[in-house]
Length: 209
Image 1 (spheres, rainbow, N blue to C red):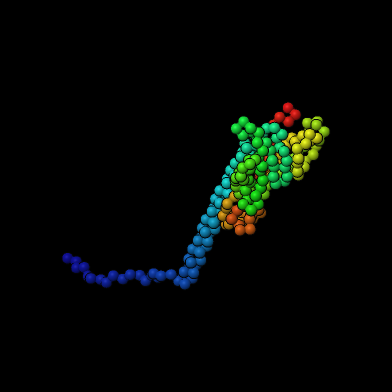
Image 2 (cartoon, helix red, strand yellow; image 1 turned 30 degrees about the vertical axis):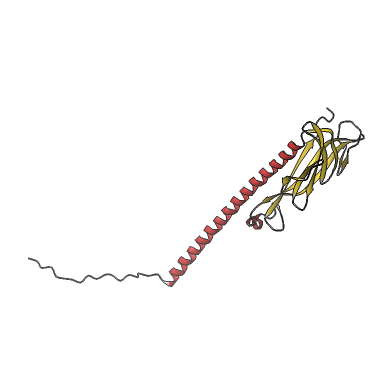
């Protein structure tokens, strides 16, 4: 019968820690990975903000154009009676009567105002940085525009065919976009609004029809 002798177990000697070089390399690699992740998140966030701002500017532009064209659609009588770069007066149907309405840009409150004859100013379109109107007139009654003017006064000597409307609208946005996309839009000094242009033509109805 064989007797088992008790032997002490010996474990081979292995290094169980990291060397200083390994620690430095590990920390450096982790730092690079973290920096890459942060940069990707920031870039993703900027792309997300940019997409949101683009959608907001497009929606705001479409709404402003629709508001103006809808409101000016139902003109009557003399149509447009007068206009300057920042204001226009026209005749509109109101409950069966032809009433004068005045529209103007308010530079202090950054909006367009509308005022019915005998009434009070009311807000028409909000967040408007500026408005510039141009008036396409026909001076020889050949049904063709021969001049664009910065002002207009109703006269039998002139036929007004079109009004070109140039607006600069303000859309709230994040200041984070300024650093990466400062050349895409104009910004208000506070950096809270981007300013974007929208231009369209209002063709007066029943001209040379």
